[in-house]
Length: 360
Image (tube, rainbow, N blue to C red; front, top):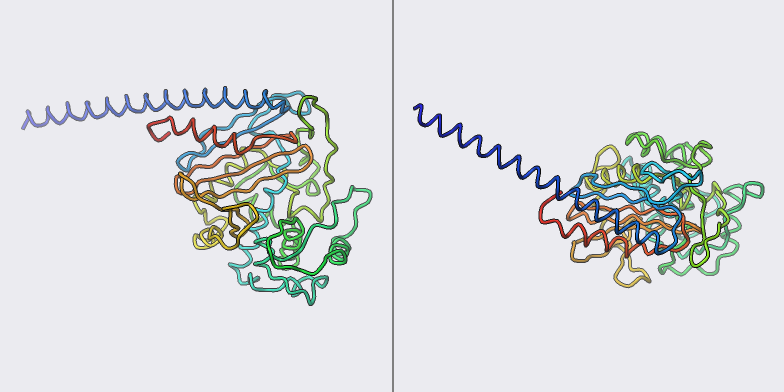
């Protein structure tokens, strides 16, 4: 009996020793990969003359990497908490808001926009068509500066007046999501920014994310730039409240990683599991080759399985959120540059992560 106990003690010690060695090995590997990422990403930033950039990575469903590159408007080193304008990545938050109300039977994707907004009365435009950019609506009115802004009703009226015959084919347009945001506000009885804050930001404790009209602290920490051979400041695209649902979000990489982790893990703080899955079903074709529209998300497949993404671009801003649900990986890229090789950055990150023979 004593001999058996002795063998068990020795075996247990051997297992513990090997687990410790494996853990140490993985820590070393993780550090090496992070060093490779830092060098590669800094080189890309410098080569493309990008003033500020922030990168975040989820690997295996967990937040693995957050790092800032360059300087913000105050000449401080960019961090994972630096606030950037994320432009059209905002549409993903609007999509979740719509689906929350669908879960509560307050909306149906088959509903017509005119059921909620008088300006669209008589127009054959469904919420589903708005979500997939197949409503036929086109962007005919640009956002206005603060001293020239008009009401959202006037924005919709002017937009409708300028439309030609609605052709139900793919047309990527901010107007689709600005209409959806107005419907969220109408049905919920809250302003669009207030609804997003209460039902998406607060449940996840996203303290570095918001809209400029909610609180003046949500100005971006970086100025927009036109980059190239000569670096020069760009004019800020106006923060027009009518455009908040399509492009108005200001966020940090850290917060977007938390949101993306919750989305990949199908966190029920935001939506039911079946709703997350419904949003990632390819629904409609686009003019972007193999990319299909889900509900808000742009979808395709590659060697990593399903790919889900949304980019953001306005003058002096380039952003990308791309994820691979089958391997629980996600990448967030934010910058204050007019030109940035966003998908090349994602490819570089994937290549470096692939070099790791172990799960991080």
